[in-house]
Image 1 (tube, rainbow, N blue to C red):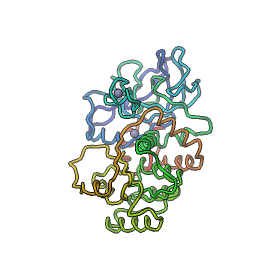
Image 2: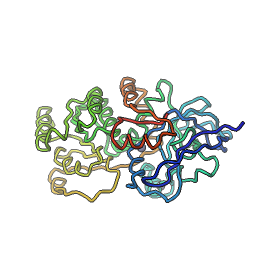
Image 3: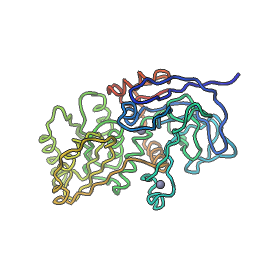
Image 4: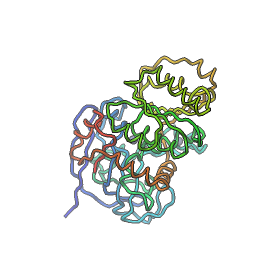
Length: 369
Ligand SMILES: [Zn+2]
Ligand SMILES: [Zn+2]
């Protein structure tokens, strides 16, 4: 009998997902078939479901944080994106982005900022092999879009931040990296923020996180990861936050503010505050502003007078996923805490409930399982 799998088909903003069963075939040469272990629901998916991120007007299987077990390999492919050998039974992270390899950035080794990114899931789910995107029990992916999870790293820990982690890693790489002893302020305690705190602490930085008490679990997690101070933006007003951070900078001998501020909240209002918090010649790293806004008022003279270096970045490439997995391998205690961040698990057929819960901020990290 033909094997069937379930997929949640996105039909358009604010519409219910259509739950369908499709036959599970064999991968074409150069592709692999992955069976669902965890498939994360990202803030980007919420933007898509609400219509804040325009998508082509057709049925799609969205979802870009798929972690699965290699069930079969098409043709003679035996290597992942980074040249690691792959065998059936291995677990891997699949990335949906395809850099064009032709634009200026790709040509200059900056594939993470490709100007013409393609996406593997932009295909009709009715078209074979059907499972093109992350919200399904299976995924057919080009082998060059997967990275094998190294031995010693659990699929669960890897599935916590397979998109937020590489995004933050790329942004910090563009900004020249983090250095031991630096004072780092992380704005936001979502997926990117939690990962940014872990990354900065592991580099020997002193970390202050600015979050909200709407989900106290998030504050507990960033404290557990080693944040020195967690400021609740609803309880501690902006002026006071600035004072506390400047006092800490003074105590640590870092001058008039944080060496590095990382904006992960996605709230446009966070940006003017970031300019206040960063010290003279400090770095302001901005990977979090992921949907269009009406703009905010800033004081551009701060950029001039404080000679602030601002670095944006919103994407990542396969190398960044490799760095993310290496980070988990060398930091097993952090990896364990990341597993704890997966607080909500759903079946594919409960996609509507999953999206509603994530939109309501109920989970630290929610996944299909
Ligand atoms: Zn994502
Ligand atoms: Zn390109």
